[in-house]
Image 1 (cartoon, rainbow, N blue to C red):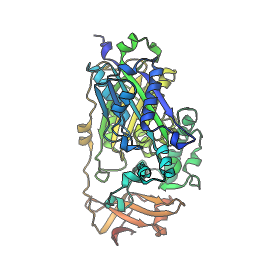
Image 2 (image 1 turned 45 degrees about the horizontal axis):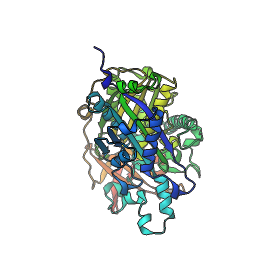
Image 3 (image 1 turned 135 degrees about the vertical axis):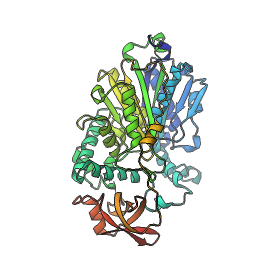
Image 4 (image 1 turned 120 degrees about the horizontal axis):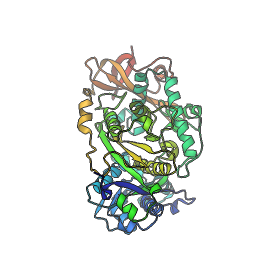
Length: 501
């Protein structure tokens, strides 16, 4: 029996905004970016859609936190009387794909006929305004400072694990060892992937940076490309200092046809899959792979009846190189094929949780433009925590018009190995499970952190002082693989310290 066109979800309009005001006081805030993006999506869809939108969902933003929640304000600004209005809980990197999947399922269940999804971050404007402001009440709008205000440093923080850029290198270094790569080989892979990202961004008008880089330029530390957290340089990490918004309109195939949208501009939404790791990144079973990522990607391919060879395009989330490295190994995506349609979070831009809305927009445009028939969108958020994937296509995919449960959490949990207990006061012999080194702005090492496994299989953290030149060199010079090396955790003031055997 043919699927009901009233319940087949399609994307009919996409819009992006790249705001670069000469005067920071004239820049759009996050709300303005979201509204402008949806207005652009409405024009892209032929106009006249926004007033009839029944669901407005937005990715939570951090640039102007005092304005949250924003979904109702967005609905009012676009003239919608939507009955479903909500912001995500947190601006996680998987948020746009989650919202797309939810919108498609609501259409499949017959609950709504038209949905709008949007997000935007004006961190560049917010930071510039804070820097220019003389009044305390304005300078307190600095979103980055406010995120940390009032937080007492905990066990993880005193060891330097305070932000995603500190944590993702744990996966990078563990992964390199598991893949059997030398440091040079691991960096070469990162440089190759990121170089291709920069080339895509250079040819993408909505991207933030239009400057192609070679693999060597990306991985080589210089004054302009300082090391951040080993082995990542500035050109290998997400660029959040942007003003970017993106949104899209999802509707039923029947409604798209009633409104005269040309068939060639209709993009079909396939089935999605989602699973996550523990929120506590020290409560993971391992760092060389992610069971939730593997389950998420394998199920989305299975449910849409596609393999890597059937996919013409892919967006493998790219906050840091370890994520697309892990993802491409799961699905069999070759190194010589670009793993982005937007340019990655370094070059396309990293608007906190809304990057994938830009990827949706670019994927839709690429499929419409004849670059392929099927594209995979894989999103990751938190501290390698949240995973959500979906497939878009130029023709209906298996299960079109049917609502589905995209939650794969039970299967991911079953696939997970034993989670080691975290022993905070341990002293004695241990083995390096993974590690990273943190750098000051002048490129000098500030400190390092070792994630160590104890003889009984449990886990602890150990500090490496920045002045311990021998250990820092051992961890970073590539002459030997630190992962798997035995040593000792000893008392060293407020933190336990790593000593090589």
